Length: 241
Ligand code: DX5
Ligand code: ZN
Image (tube, rainbow, N blue to C red; front, side, top):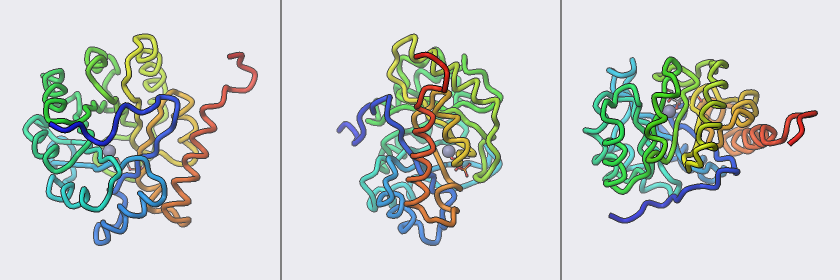
């Protein structure tokens, strides 16, 4: 199968992934266009099944429609039980990155292989209460680790600060092993927390509320988030490097 649009990104650059969950679904096409014109690096699509998380959102037909409206890479964050049952459908709909939760994937390595076989990049998401060690054994095959910094299920929640330690631990482990996995964070990313997550080692930032519900508009919000995030790349004052 054809290799999807995105290749491994440069680890040193920051990517912003607007989450359409926070957009006005009546104007979904506009929201996708605004993210692309505003410089979003990829589009984050939250898929919820009402079983793994207490909310229900969208599925492959909506992804298929979004695919026709943008050339941004699409990442589907599957908050569903038995995610392996839906990998092919999301791949066929035009998804570039398929992210499954380690908590619902007893055969996680196999599911990662399945995602690759379907022609997509493979990501693993990890809940706040799950130790980062749960994903260590798939670091060699995962293209992306998504650290949840809120409890999955809803947008607009408060960032859980102790997750910064988990981000740092994963950053150190990925670097030590020289793995290529991207480190992404999801939930409560704002102009304040963006700097902290980058300082801890994240390089891809999902942002819903702070992009789609800010008064300044989508484009200015993405730009402001990128600026805030890049401050986290600077070495801390007084710390030799
Ligand atoms: C939560 C979702 C997030 C959500 C983030 O379960 O996985 O992607 O859209 O929204 P904000 O940025 O509003 O916390
Ligand atoms: Zn998400």
